[in-house]
Amino acid sequence: MYYKYIENEFSTDICEKIKNTPLDKFILRNPAWRRLSHSSTIKEMEQIVGVRDAKELMRRKLLMLRKFPGATRLEFSQYSLPDDLADELIDSLPDCIKDLGRDEMEPILQVSTGGTMLYPHKGHYRKASIFRLLKGDKEKTTWWKNTEDFKVIDEYRIPDVRKLEVADQAELVEDKWLIFNHFEWHSVQKDNPNSLRINVGIDFNTKSAQEISNLF
Image (cartoon, rainbow, N blue to C red):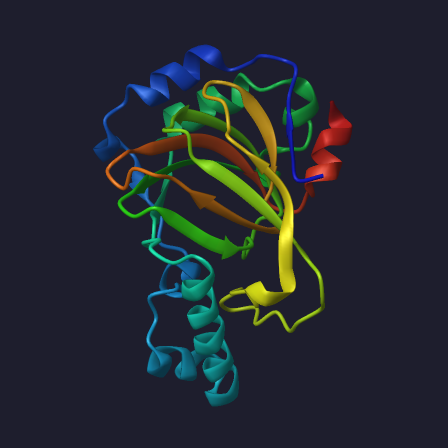
C-alpha cells in the first residue's frame, strides 16, 4: 500500500487553526538528514559514506538529472508544532490513533518552496504518517518500485533510477486525511516553482503504513 485516504473526517478545526497560524510560530526542525541532501558535494559525501559509495551516489545523481531533464530541486522544510497546537491536534485524533501512545507520534508541519521536483527518495526515520494537505497546486506524488535490487546507501537513500518503475501516482486532495507510505521510494513534482505546498501530519516512529491502515 502506497497511500490510502481515510474515510473518517477528524481534526478539521485544529487543522484550520494550524493553516492560519503564521509560520514563525512553528519550530524549524534540523534532523541529521537535512544535511544529507541531493545538493551535497562529493567531498561532503566522502566524509560520511567513504569514497566508493560517494562515487556511486554521484553517478546516481547524474542518472536522476538525465531522467528528469529541466526539473529543479524542490526544497522541503519540516517544522515542529508549538506545544499547544500539537496537544490539540493529538487530542482531536481518533481513539485508534491516540491508543498508540504519545511516544509513537510526532506532529509536524511541512512546507515546500521553490523548484519543481523532490527527487525519488525514501524516509530516513519514518515509515508512515497520516497526512493532510492544507495547501497545494496540483502536485503529483509518485511512488516507485524496484525492477532490480540495488544497494541502498542508508545515509542518503538516493536510488538508482534505472532500476525503478512507477508503482502508483496521485494528485493529493486538499483537506482530506490519508495514510502516506514513506518507506517506499517516492517523489513529488509540480509545474509552478513559485507555488507553495503545506501539509500537516502525524509521523509514526515505528508503525508501517499497513499497520496504520489496519487500525481503521
